[in-house]
Image 1: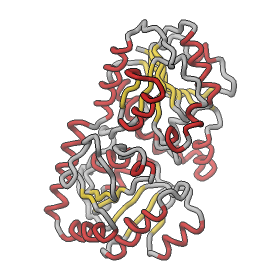
Image 2: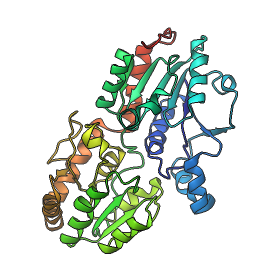
Image 3: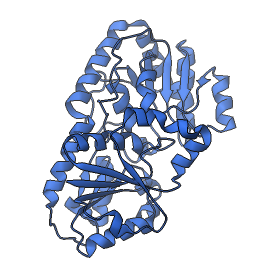
Length: 370
């Protein structure tokens, strides 16, 4: 099967979390014998920021980790007929221009011989629904949503049984525990500052508890404005700048534990979506403590795969427990790895995608959304 994935960028993970999962799942699809290719627009915002900050060296870690992946850039106003020629399955990510999304759908509606899916991995359907409604999806066969609560949004929009929940997952070919353990110290948090939607949570569930537990904290990420850096400095946090996602396993392997601080939309409006860092951290064998998050789909086993804290005081207590109890750390690592390997690898998601395609059928007609 020839599979095309229209992404914002395969090469860059600079403030582009979808690249993490995409790399892993495309590699798994390739290992199943499919002809897999990513297509990305020239001048992609994420890649341009990466190159501006780090030059060509910024993509080296990705290239070393994923030498088998293939991506092709296309110019503005591309010949979409040519780009999709010969494809059996086309997936279009929601971080694409509406005109491109519509053009691909129009080809399918005119009788294109490929199955066509729209892939949504963001909270815009609830935080900025008009941005998603701007997409003309009338020619699409279905929607892949990265959480059941997001799938419910599309069902309310008329997609019915043509939306599938397709969670992110860990690329366990790359995200795995260290081959040889080395001395671990302190906490690590890998995440971007964003647009201020979890500033209060980061201070209450990460910066202050780390200091009170006496654990040094290293932070990696981008888009930290001066006021954010001043806050880090006030708490004695060591800000390390951007980290290529391909190097995250090495960094997890140097630290005692990590913390999950979900963005507000994933606690208030879209529960059940952990974001990919939880999958990656557990796959790397690092103990994790989470700020409040409703695992309403039962993806993990709270208290076994990771610890949960209801407030900053509990977070401090749990970090102290992890600091002082090697047995607890070992138990969390073993349980987290068990759950990831049993349910949440990119290989699992590749199999799920093939099951979805089988449901669509190679010649399924396009149906209009009400």
